[in-house]
Image (cartoon, rainbow, N blue to C red; front, top):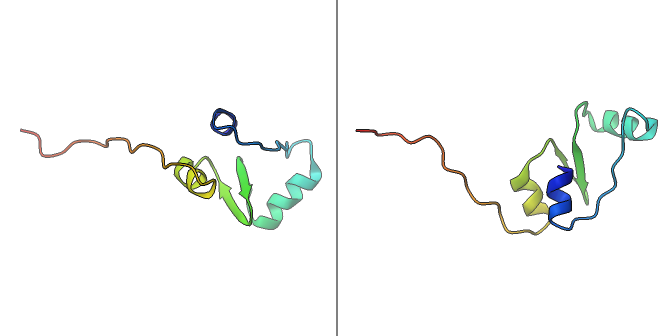
Amino acid sequence: MKGFLSENGIAYVERDVMEDAVALRELEELGVMTTPVVRVGDEVVVGFDRARLSALLGMDPPPRQAGPCCGGG
């Protein structure tokens, strides 16, 4: 997550929920008990969701990755 944000020139504030009781309480209020969590305006992204972050940040969508191929021969 941090790498993605840094590589794309996106400023962010890192908060350690193990050291910051206020940050932990904010996650609890959101009903979230996992990290990473990113807030973009009023939107909250739980986990590293590159496509959703790109959309919320107004970036070009990430390239689609090919999935397993079917219909072999």
